[in-house]
Amino acid sequence: MGATLHDEVKMSTNAMAWIEFAPGIDYKVLRTSAETGVWTVLFRCAKGSAFPPHLHYGAGEYFLFKGVMDYRMGRAHAGDFGYEPLGVYHERTEFLEDSELLFTNHGPIAFVNEDMSVKMLLDWQFFTERAREAAA
Amino acid sequence: MGATLHDEVKMSTNAMAWIEFAPGIDYKVLRTSAETGVWTVLFRCAKGSAFPPHLHYGAGEYFLFKGVMDYRMGRAHAGDFGYEPLGVYHERTEFLEDSELLFTNHGPIAFVNEDMSVKMLLDWQFFTERAREAAA
Amino acid sequence: MGATLHDEVKMSTNAMAWIEFAPGIDYKVLRTSAETGVWTVLFRCAKGSAFPPHLHYGAGEYFLFKGVMDYRMGRAHAGDFGYEPLGVYHERTEFLEDSELLFTNHGPIAFVNEDMSVKMLLDWQFFTERAREAAA
Amino acid sequence: MGATLHDEVKMSTNAMAWIEFAPGIDYKVLRTSAETGVWTVLFRCAKGSAFPPHLHYGAGEYFLFKGVMDYRMGRAHAGDFGYEPLGVYHERTEFLEDSELLFTNHGPIAFVNEDMSVKMLLDWQFFTERAREAAA
Image (cartoon, rainbow over all chains, first blue to last red; front, side, top):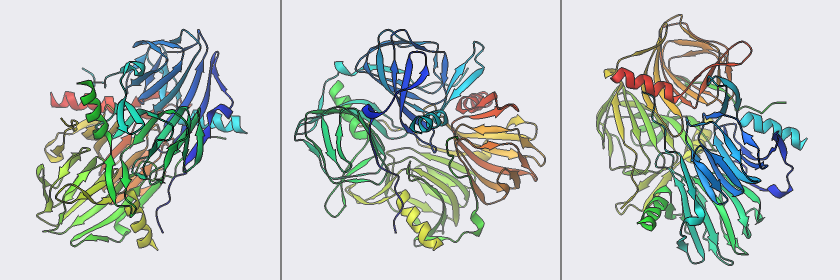
């Protein structure tokens, strides 16, 4: 009697706790998909924090609410939107001010060594598990 | 000599002009894809404005920055995130305060008549064309 | 203790019954997704059968196993693969021999009237419901 | 004056040359996407050939035309369709007869060492580059 729809979701991100990702970087998980591998998070990045070198094995998108992010494309300020296509290598992503951004990645991100070998794959499973642990 | 990557994009949404969608509702186009049909926009919705009844033929996602949105799931406030799955029918989406939201839809939205027949399909082509006209 | 994976599926299409789509055209449903709206079917199209004019609101892909299909791009024969992007209008798709094809569509297809108004939207829900009825 | 559509494609796979993947395994590239990372290929796998252990960082789908494939889900025969979700680990995929299959993967596949560290990531770029070299 009709195909079953996915659940509709409304969540208050203000009521959620930040989870630590790395020194100076915290996140809240808004959505992960076990089907497509997409993951959407809020990142809060303190002035001086940075993401290590990584390769995009899924396209990324960000919307910066607050702060200044310095990366491959230059400096992003509050109100800037960016699209990071498949295959892009981001040598460094540094935060010059306390920053907050909404970030979606359509698949895994590979943190890599200097020879581009894969150190760690960051994907929907990582964020799903951390969000579950945080909720427990 | 290597597969060609898509263009990486960084855009300042503050520098873009609002385009009128309907009385009280304006938008800025951040991204449209001719391959997947996804479209990402910023909506600015004045207090009292509303979206007419529509069916989601692609899942939608919003992040409300500012204001209050009243819809099928109740009231969303600044900082709220929502996921609107495929097949969901939104009878009304009303703004109780001046509001701004980032909105992504993965495919078309059908504005429908009372008998659910399709009045108009809102899709990536609509936003791509309007963004082009606005830029010209 | 770990993110839950989707179900892995292996199905024998030979053991499935054909379901009637239209005179001379039958199908078997291999997969539908309530999350992305993608649907994958096998179509069996008798010589002389045809799909009515339609617009692709999701990209389509086919692999023809058997027969001859005559459409916008010319004649496809057994072993031909086609990609039908978003927004493409197929005025007619006719089968000149008894044909079989694997077909995936990433979203809805709109069967349209002469003035391009939407007559009917064919989507994942249609195929999910029919497959359920056939299985019951 | 209208949004630009992607190219519509019709290709005769019978006219294409096989490219060697590994001993006993050849492929033809039907489609790769620089935007989504999806890749669709035909694989021809000789009796006794096998894919090494791998993890799916993108869901996979196959349709077996010919032969017998022995893998995690048991034996697949001609006419069988399979869906391999994100996160699935396939320790071995062996061909018990000369086989042919259409295969689509929605992102990268990681060939892994015994400790699950990543040996090599197989993705859209790999197939795009090989197809270009073969065409040159």
